[in-house]
Length: 119
Image 1 (cartoon, helix red, strand yellow):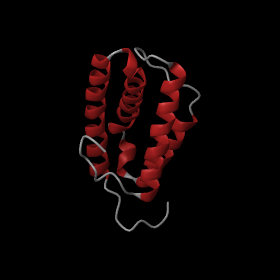
Image 2 (cartoon, rainbow, N blue to C red):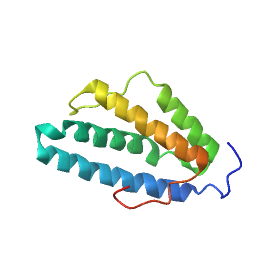
Image 3 (cartoon, one colour):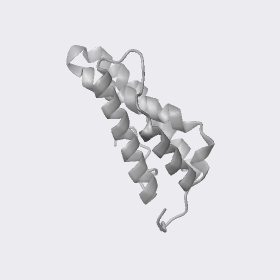
Image 4 (cartoon, rainbow, N blue to C red):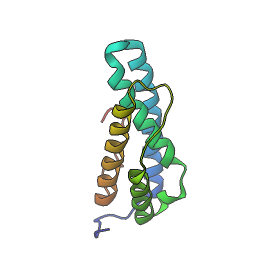
């Protein structure tokens, strides 16, 4: 990791993951109500929920290097299975995108302070 201008805050990361987890569940419900045209939105929200669920309770959030290593492990997975999604390939693409975004945030140690529902 590069020299960050601020110290890693594991509690802030866990709070961010928890809030994004809750927001993704709400986004899934909203997309489900919109119907057929919102299938991509549903899959995107389901991908975010899966990523947050995999990381929010992990002890690796206490250290920046450990969190980055866990993200690399998740990115290296071959497939991401989930039930209730509409398109497996699209879901996997969204999961990888979410993981890459988190990896960038982790490397720069910024963005975790943004805890509003809409980002």
